[in-house]
Amino acid sequence: MVRDGIIDADGYVINDITKEILVRQALSHAEAGAEIIAPSDMMDGRIGAIRDQLEAQQMVNTQIMAYSAKYASCYYGPFRDALGSSGNLKGGNKKTYQMDPANSDEALQEVAQDLQEGADMVMVKPGMPYLDMVRRVKDTFGVPTFAYQVSGEYAMHMAAIQNGWLQEKPAIMESLICFKRAGADGVLTYFAKRVAQWLHDAEMNR
Image (cartoon, rainbow, N blue to C red):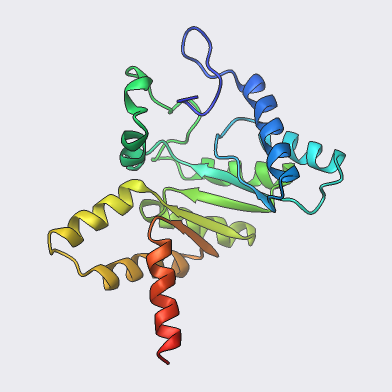
């Protein structure tokens, strides 16, 4: 599912069929013990469908993190290259269902819709190029808001660090602080393990 969903013979995503599969995946994860379900596909209506089925199965405490503001960004490139999936797009793109980077109001509409359908928290992805959206979402809705520091952001930092242009720890920590300053309650990042170690070491040395 290179395009985050089931596609037809012409290469277009079939929203409703994909949504049915997403519901089954969500139930499988919840039954296995997942406390948070985080569909990242951007299919229309998937949050409501997942919430309805979770409640029908008495899984009322399972939370949903909606990737509400997921932009059609070039910053996903390193991740797609690592998967070997870039070539499978066959000249296409995900702009039919991911958001236009130039459009800020659409994100607020998507967040409002996902919250109405039953999302408990929302995600803005990518992170650093969209800090303005993190702040707008947090200020507008006041719900738990997360940012995703994606592979392209990670790659830029690592390239600069490896070439001696930036210092590793200060640069990484500053990049994460900016998410918090913008209003993010949490950050998904490829730097998580090393940052956790730094924070642990700092606490132990106090």
